Amino acid sequence: MPDYAKNAITAKIKALYGSRLSEEQYNILMNKKNVSEAAAYLKEETVYGALMNTVQPSSVHRGELENLLNKDRFIKYNSLRYYSNSQDSYYNYILAEIEIGQILYMIRLLNTGKTSDFIAQAPFFIEKGLNIDLISLANVDSFDALLEVLAKTGYALALSKCRPSENEKIDYTLCETALYSLFYKQIRQITAKSFNKKIQKQLETLFDTYIELTNINSILRLKRFYPDTSAARIESYILPTNGRLKKDFLYSLINSRDADEVLEKLHNSSFAKYFGENDEVFIEYDIYQIRYRLASRFLHFSTDAPVVFTAFMILKAIEVSNITMIIEGIRYNIGMQEISTLIVR
Image (cartoon, rainbow, N blue to C red; front, side, top):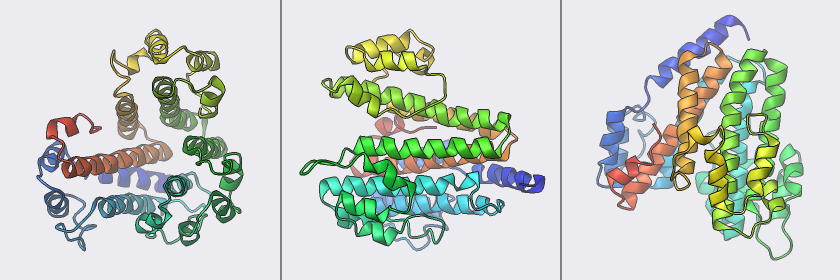
């Protein structure tokens, strides 16, 4: 990519990031009495106004709102991708991320028998670029049918080892691990081919720190809530990483007696700085808080377009998650103070 394109992406990202929701706007949103008031505020007082121009706040529902917020993230992404000519560019990883999200959503629906719900949230605003056909995916009614729809993609091979036995539910976590293992493998291949060592290192930090903490969270949750899960089974849920989490230490965590032993080992390791004394309850929040801080740091201080782009897309996804969480909290009458503890900022 020529220097002018890199500079254009970086400058545009800085401008887009400047329009994010402020602390004051988050607080105002959390104080709304119902979803209609919250939707009206987003429409009339925030950067999401233009996007929500056709929405009636009095009748909007959570799914519709989340779809609009994700559409806004994609529009921002598309405006940045314009500066990259290559069809197999690193920047296309966002499309793979969307594809995996849709596949996993269909797997959840197959397990609950509610596949008809898929069509309402499908991102049909993406006109081109996806390697899967959303209409075909919406018509899936079994795991084998899902593999057939995905036959011309790498996803089918990744998921083939997750086929459930007859009359058994699909192992969602195993599918998630298979898909994201493929996802991160492809990202590493593209970054190694496309970027210098400096950029590779920064991108590895953004991705691998998140993967490592997600692996720790998986181990801790399984030890706490599914104590009979075998070490081999836990290992099958672990995402591959090239980060600081050494294999010996990872296996030590996997083979721990229980969740308390996992926490003890973590508090005596280099990962202690990431967790407080009682953080097994809020570990998922901590993971996203750490990811937020890393992305913010890279967005502010990096001068490399791929790194700044990746940091921005992470921060944008977190903002979408924050707004969705606030809307859910308002819908179920959760107090502002409790909602506030879950918002990543």
